[in-house]
Image 1: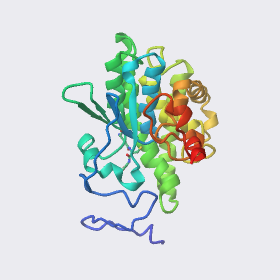
Image 2 (image 1 turned 60 degrees about the vertical axis):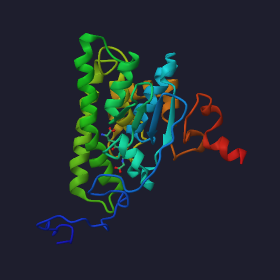
Image 3 (image 1 turned 90 degrees about the horizontal axis):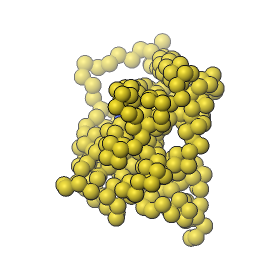
Image 4 (image 1 turned 180 degrees about the horizontal axis):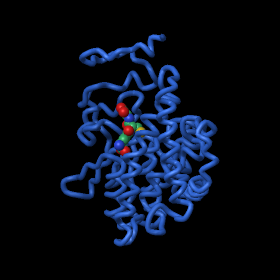
Length: 290
Ligand SMILES: N[C@@H](CCC(=O)N[C@@H](CS)C(=O)NCC(=O)O)C(=O)O
């Protein structure tokens, strides 16, 4: 029997700082700030503190969609929070999100300014503030159901499947099997729904589509965990067609490169403070001008 199979939990769990894995250096069993760190505030009412993970991209896609729809009040500054370096534990960030996770937002157009954390709450707050990317009243319950489905389901995909398949210090058959099964079940839930619905709710593109696309759309497009073949994502044909349709939207193209720090340099816009930044401030342009 290997050490892994013979592991017996101790009576009281204690923090093993050597537990390994990709995020071992930032994960902690306690909340709260680790250091004083001031966050910058730009000139727009909406201040986003984030990173282009699926949860972060949901918000930048919605903000770019609002701007694309001509809603000028949705102008925003997007500041980079490097979670691998522990920025989410800085004092100002924790004051906005006591849960120390991106995305977090401040709305300075209200008195006093409003803090919003949890990506689903940010999507709903912005959509309701600007009255866009929602359904009509008759389909509101369906839209909220799918939005909350995403918030409740994605931790099995990210924290479960993604963690054990891509980030854990060694491959373990039991958790990979368990979470691959659940991820495929979730993809099948979506595939069956999208077989006879163009959009997730109310016959129109809403924040439910944006939230689900950021995780499951990007998964079937082969952008998550290098797991497209393993999960046979091509077999979820309705999810794939819906994901491609959303991906082709100009706002979605822009939203997914904001606060991005990996991949091709022309697809990385570390901070976004103005619409022109997409033309002048991507990393290829900045690197070229140095
Ligand atoms: N339920 C939260 C989850 C946010 C979340 O897990 N954020 C991750 C990146 S995708 C994070 O900030 N991780 C940093 C950490 O765990 O220390 C939401 O949807 O906003």
